[in-house]
Length: 540
Image (tube, rainbow, N blue to C red; front, side, top):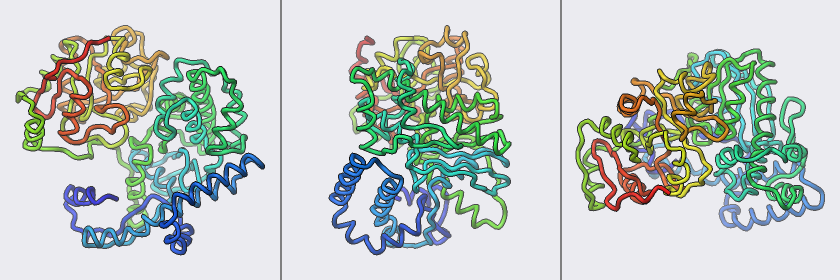
């Protein structure tokens, strides 16, 4: 909870501080909370050395005896203790900064994920499954939910987390664990899964769940994996192997529990389900009738899930799940703020009343146009309001545009597609159309799509589309539709408006800086259109 976000929440909802009945925090445990009361002062004085000493001791035990679930759980208890000092101070923070207090309710991490998925799925009766690296000592929960009543059927400990193993491979491949896992998914299509058997000696599907057969975690796991791999491995083969293992184990796990519950309508949340190729495999299971992945599937969705959990528990009547028409929940900026940001940078901009048609014309002429409009998107995907748009016909765009944005050249660009033309572009959409509104699943592309829009078709023949309709975002829809009228193509590239390693742009100043740093051709910011004063770099 930051001081900057609370006023916005109150203003946007028209809520007075005294009307807030409770605040939900997406983490447990009262057990940890009681420990923290005794140890907060010590932890605050000496957090960094304590953590380093614990990790050194853990590594030593790993080297001598191998890891144990007990040791791993102790590590997560330590993490919980270290975080409790901040959580314990929430009431003080509210009183000091906002002049009110409210009861603080702690919600289990995975239950919060499950609530985020269920209550936005539109499903009254659902199988709900969560998977991530770790949270509150678990890496997965399975629920059967009927009319808002949750029945937990299964739990996987964080020690047995396949999400953690994906993170270890991310690190070994030279990327940042718990941040760059998407790069492994993109890179996997360029390799062969020749190390899948080796990885299954470490993480496997057994007894209805995942099992850490390697008996190692964190740095000990990284070291053990590096020792097991041949010195000459190619990272694309390692990425392909980890992706294959995730898809096989993950889909087998999901299939078992969907068949066990007898309910083929599936709602998912948790960071593992940011993996769109895994989601495709799940969608294609015969046991799955429909698939929904919460748009904020990672920890960014926990606050919403915790709020749903608490609201449901406090409500005298059952809260029915609904469907999200859109996820444009973030900040928006007025024309005055936009003008001021443009003037501050010393730039010139033209005001274009029919900005959508002009953007479509520019894209059809081969120009790269960044779009900044309306409210920012919620979740990890750019969904049009903070996006870079370009025609989908140039198969070399992955190289030169990724280079401009300082991104990895093997990362595919995703398309935005008019909903009414989706079947012309993608196969097997039925049961996942709602999920595809939020770019959470890949699909095999049709032969027509591969021929006409090669820039958004990954080397494995798939794409991760955002399907849009006129009602969801009329301005964004009109850009793509005007482009279709000019070119006959209902899809364009939609990639996130940011430089590599930076978050998606939020404010007008962010947008202008990203536009200039990225060497983009045009910026459509509200109804203002800016042309890059330096000119765009060559496309090589």
